[in-house]
Image (cartoon, rainbow, N blue to C red):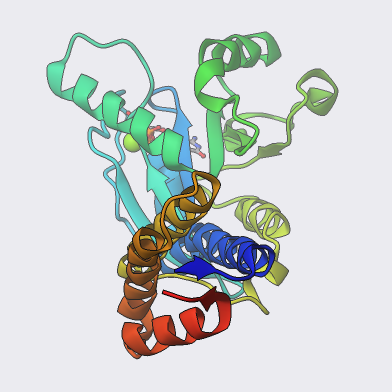
Length: 276
Ligand SMILES: Nc1nc2c(ncn2[C@@H]2O[C@H](COP(=O)(O)OP(=O)(O)OP(=O)(O)O)[C@@H](O)[C@H]2O)c(=O)[nH]1
Ligand SMILES: [Mg+2]
C-alpha cells in the first residue's frame, strides 16, 4: 500500500499542526480567563504588601502587623476589574532569615513570582530613597528580569510624607505608582494600569482551550502528527504510519467524542492511498 499524494497529505499535516499549535497556546489565555491574570505583590518585609492586598480585595484577608515577616504563606484571591479577572497573590517579604518556616514561605514566594504575569514591587517610601530602591531591585534582578513579565514599582506609605517624591520616573526606568495602602489612596491608579496591559482582543474571536484534559489530548494529537511526518521522511511503510494516524484521531476524538476512527481512516485512505 502506498500514499498517493504526499504533497497533499504534508500540507494537511502542516495545517493540522498549525491549528493544534494555536489551540495549545490558547490554553494559557484560557487559564487566565478561568483563574485570573496572576499578579504577585512582592517586596521587603513590612512595606505593606498584605495591607495592599486587603485594600484591593476590600476585605481583611491577610494578617497585617508591624512585625516584619508576618506573612509566611502566600495568600491569594481573584477579583474582576472591568470584566477582567486578576488573581492577586500576597507573598512573604523577601529577606534572608534564620527562621525555617519563614524561609519556606520565601521559597514559595519565589515560585509565585515565577508564575506571575505582573509583579507589583512594593517599597516603603519612608525608608527608601531612590538609591536604596535601585539596590533592592538590583538584588532581585534575577527574579524580575523576565521579558514576559511586567513589573510595576509601588511606593507605599505616602501618607507619612509631606509630598510625593519628584523626579522618580527619570531615575528608575520603570513605571512607578505612589500610594497609601492603609489610607486607600491612589489604588485606582494600580487597577487602571493593570487594565491597560490587558489586550482583551486576544480573548474575543478565537477558540480558547481552558480544559486541562483537552489540552492533554491536543498535545498527544500533535505528538502523533509529528510521528506521522517522521514516518514519511523516514519512508516507513504506510501500514505503520496508519497506526499514528489512528492515534492522532483517537486523541482528537477524546475531545469531540464523535470521531469513529475507522470511518475517518477509511476516508483518508480512500483519498490519499492506492493499492494494498
Ligand atoms: N502609614 C502607613 N502604614 C502602612 C501603610 N501600609 C501598611 N502600613 C503598615 O505597615 C506595617 C506592615 O504592613 P503589612 O501589610 O503587614 O506589611 P507586609 O509587607 O505584608 O509585611 P510582611 O508580611 O512582614 O512581609 C503595618 O503596621 C501596616 O499598618 C500605609 O500606606 N501607610
Ligand atoms: Mg504581609
